[in-house]
Amino acid sequence: MTRVLAAVSLVCLACGDGSGGTSRGDGSGTPDTITTAGRIAISPSRQGEAVTRFLAGGQTLGTTEVEIRKRLGPPDSVVVSPIPSGEDARQTDTLVRLYYDTQTFGLYRDALSHHDVLSEVIVDTTGAPAVLGLGVGSSRQDVVSALGPPRHIDRDRTGVETLEYNSRDDGSTVRFLVLNNIVRRIEWNYIVP
Image (cartoon, rainbow, N blue to C red; front, top):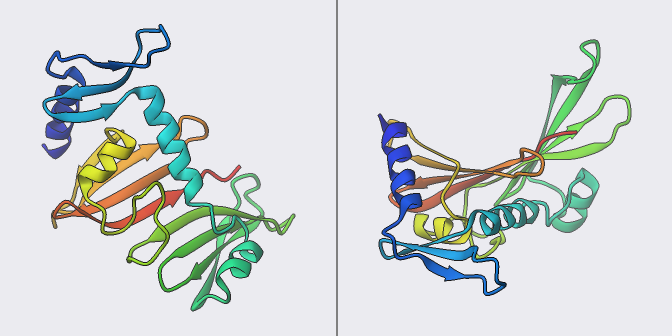
């Protein structure tokens, strides 16, 4: 039922109130912003750019263990877990999680090459650097204003709402977990090549 209501809400938001909006001014007639019922939503092309920038923002502290440690120092703790390789069922790769006070980094380490690839970043406390002005403590409306309507909305039994955005380029995602209209956690998940 929640997904149906969320889908109806998104359709209503997309339909708008007929007020049009402002155009880019480049002669294309393509709207730059769309005003709907007193709210401002960004156009699909600008939304994709914003989501891509936000996803890149999760990588600002580094994409390998060496880079992250160089920027943040030693982590509070490290957990190393074996995981099956996506390429060879006989090979066991590794997920390395670096836990810091304000962030958790998940790194996929290929067993053959020993190269790290950033696969996830989790922020669940204030104090982590904001990306595009968004961080833990931002409002739900701040997220939607900056990134546009989410691709998927879900709500669990405890009332936590998940707003999910996807990159059009590679399928990477960012999820905002929202409680009482305040962002409580942000999860970046990057596709491992």
